[in-house]
Length: 536
Image (tube, rainbow, N blue to C red; front, side):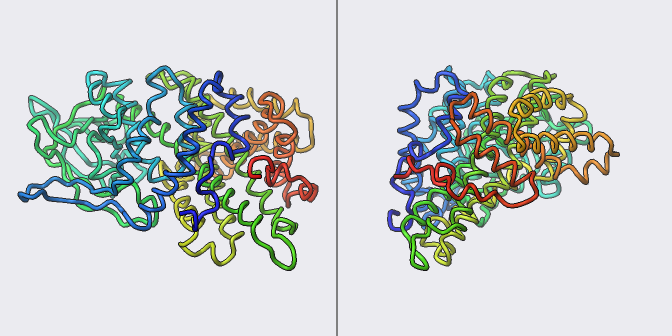
């Protein structure tokens, strides 16, 4: 891959200009794990980067439906390189359950970034999470998942509903000895790879809508060792090919109820919050890899008589990449910190838990927009060859396109943001965190962000529900951007990030609240757009 990628073969932890400041700010004692993170950065920039590209171009998972005797097995065949890598990546899910923190997990997810490979770890992690909190009787299965001996999955999506989980039609009934499921899931990531899945289904007699949904744990083999569900087919996807996604059929499938049936929708939403944080980390990780590819490229190339890096418009685009990535990462790691504090809660939840939800909605939606924009801009900096699959940047751009869609598109995040703002009382803690921070900074740029934040929340309060929904997506962007500005300033003041973060915060505010272009003073600020020490 060294002939197709500039970033391949480099340690992606050591190249990152923002991780040390973020980890110092949000993860107490992170220095004790520096060696482990550096080793993972080597893996992320080396073997994992190469295997992801290999699977995408040459070794997609293949569904094997029958064994040698003609029995249905519905198992995927993976490249041996992917099999070996997945065993190494299984360690990503262990820290929160072995005395560590979610910061550790999500830092590694960000460094890995590849949506297909990280998706496998994320959906496995959601099964581990569900067993850990609500089905401890299956701790033996949890141990297998944590060790990498088994793979998990989350199967919720049905063809008639998509994000509307309340429209699910898969049913569950008790046969006197066990629960049985009947129905199908239309977009099931991990199909053919999964040993244990968590599945949404409506118990017989349960009410319609989302409140009637329960969560079940479904093993690939039933108690008699027989195939417990069938994989109809795998999907042909634009990207994320490392994770096989398909259609799954349940016919009298043996299942185990997780927790209390009437709380199933809450368990489901907890795992969705976990997945949304992973989505944000993946989006920013892809943006960072694209930025690295572009930075190395513009250092190597010359046009019109001078190095690309010397052209003002190139520096402007590099500034755009740096600002969006730093802002998106600051918001993401703040959301991770909130989740790390609240994840042990069970329904009914405290305001602290709902505040973590709010920050997750903001981060998921905004980072997906930043991620797709940044990968496309980086590809543009390559010129025509960036559109050629021989270059790594082309795949990064394809991979990033899933991040706005997975785990609920921007419309869903906007509606969920409205819900927690209006019904869960999180507006007050949001204001309490970000208004004083922006007021304390006192710059014109901080005032721009503060004014936009306050106007947006006041406007939402004045609207009828339908009107509020109309403006919800733009309101989400404004709240996310204002929080990002405040958090970048915070990294300067508290995270030890230095003046670079004051400049990034000012640039972010000018671009997204100032109604115009980045100010030209950034032209002479290589610490912003090139972070010289990281790539020289």
